[in-house]
Image (cartoon, rainbow, N blue to C red):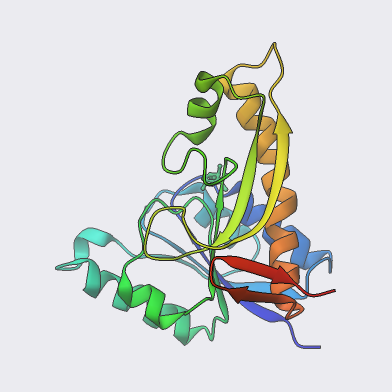
Length: 203
Ligand code: GRF
C-alpha cells in the first residue's frame, strides 16, 4: 500500500511533528511526512525536519502583500510536494479560504484541551485556572473558525491536586503525541467519514 503524503505546518518546537515522523518511520502509520513548512524562520520544528531528511521550508508571512497571497504560496508548495493531507502542529495562524479550498476536509489540527472547552491560546493554563477536574486534547478537522471543526479523536487527562499549569500541559502533550498519529492512521486507512459536525469512524 502506498504511503499517505503528509504536509505539516508548524511555528515552534515541533514535538507533535516529531511524534508523527517517528510513527511513520516505525511503520505505525501508513503515512510519511514529505514537507514541513514554517511561518517562523527559527522554529525548532524545521531542524527536526532537516534532521530527518524532510524538506523544511520557511515561508514568511511578511513577504506577501496579504493573507490570500501568503496562503496561495503555502498551498502551492504543498501541492508541489503532492501532499494529500495537511497537519497543523503548533501552527500559529488561522487558516483562510485559500488553504481550506485547496485541501477540503483534508486539514487536521491538534488542540491541547477538550474542545469545545478552551479553544484558542493558552488552553492548558486556562483549563487549570478554571479548576476543571479533567482536561485533555483534541484532534479535529479544520474549518474557517478557530478550533471549531469536526472532532476526530480526544484523550482525557485528569487534573491532579498537585498539578501546575506546566505539569498538566506536559501530561496533555504526552497524549497529543499518541492521538495525532492515531487520527492520521484512521485517515490513511480511509476510515473517517464526516457528516455535518460529526466524524464517524468505520470499523
Ligand atoms: C501543542 O500543545 C498543540 O496542541 C498546540 O500547539 C502545541 C504545539 O507543540 N496546537 P509542538 O510544537 O508540537 O511541540
